[in-house]
Amino acid sequence: MRHMQAFVVSLVACGVVGMIAPGRAHAQAVADPASDAKMWVGGHLGLSPIGSIKADAEGMSTSTDPATAFELGARFEYQVSPRVSIGLAPTILFGVKGKDENDSASQLDLPLRVTVGGEVAPKIRIYGFAGPGYSILFPPSRGTGDTQHPSGFMIGFGGGVGYRIAPKLTLAGELGYQFRFLSQTEDVFGQSIDVSAQDNFLTFSVAATAGF
Image (cartoon, rainbow, N blue to C red):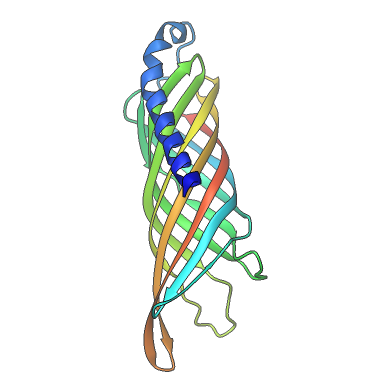
């Protein structure tokens, strides 16, 4: 719990710095102006080495540590103002499984993405982000043809540092945490059972976006 509290505090601090520091760096930034592009498109690669997997059915709960997962995602962002952007960040997560399991699942995240931040030095931007959305899990095939796909609400939080290598091209490193709340109804011997699950991951990612 202390580690989670420290992580949340770090994200809040990151967002605050991203909002305050741009004003102090304005004089330096004038000599190297950023692009006035409104639409930014790109993608990211992510590694998720830490997290938790939980399931609950009929009052019985299980929890396990996950194996390291990998993700591949796209970015579509619109720059509403110099400090705020909104968009979509569809992502596919691979290798979702417990540490001791052989078969892995994949997962599709469909979050909105809101970022707030600004330049703290010429070409360097610090920002925080939030991503509420919808998530769908694709479990390993059971071989019976009746595999279901638990789905539900998800939300992610995090922060990042971007470096503008050209007026319309940016590279960024990010650290975020995603919470996914999934559910489905299974038929067991003619009886419907509601099953809920969570798979949460801490993710390190590298992103590239281009402005248009």
